[in-house]
Amino acid sequence: MSDAKTALTFFDANILYYSDDKRGPVKQRLAKSLIRAHRENKTGVVSLQVLQEYFVNVVRKLNLDPAVARRKVEIFSRFHLVEPNLSDVLASIDFHRLHRISYWDAQVVHCARRSGCRVVLTENLQHGQDFDGVKIVNPFL
Image (cartoon, rainbow, N blue to C red; front, side, top):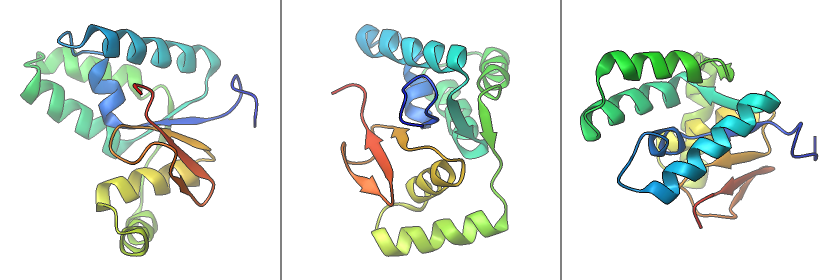
């Protein structure tokens, strides 16, 4: 799984969000490029939580039409999709307590690890940080 073309990569909601944010054209281009590459290589992973956060934020902050945002959620759901269950919620709570990060970030990292990802693309955690073999990468640095 070390090959970039086969390694699974988890997308946090903020990366998906930037693909619609015209206020930051550099971030938008990079986000779209990452999404496109991982769709083509079938290496992108998202969770239900990520899709929900994406929808809420693009509708609220970018005034994206909810019908358009819904369609984008459908498109993003074609990535590998992690659907957290109760054991994932409890594991995320434990991860939150152990690492002292927000519950939502803990759930992202837990779902990434559960799905076999070695990388999480996000701005929400410290770039380069490693959580039990899952590396945090801020692609905008």
